[in-house]
Image 1 (tube, rainbow, N blue to C red):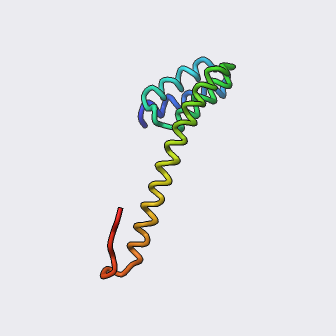
Image 2 (cartoon, helix red, strand yellow):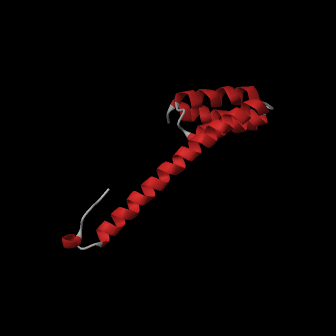
Image 3 (cartoon, helix red, strand yellow):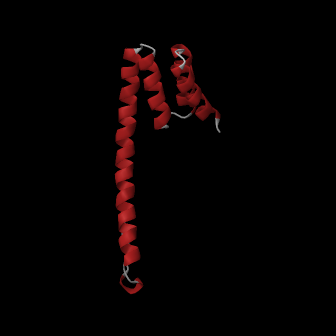
Length: 100
């Protein structure tokens, strides 16, 4: 397991134990190590909320929402590509013409 994932898990455990500042610090470390990891961002928002840091949680949530929007656009693009490939695989070879 990579260190960022360990710190994300630590943040969860610390939060459940009522040690919110420790949970926040662990979640922040995980996010610094892997800022594109949405799960780590979610843990950070939860930790901030549980620790009573609503303003910080709101700012972190905005970051998370921006990431989710970009991820959704990427997922939509990938789904279109997969659909195109499925159709190509269903087409007999002599009729096949791949386009992007």
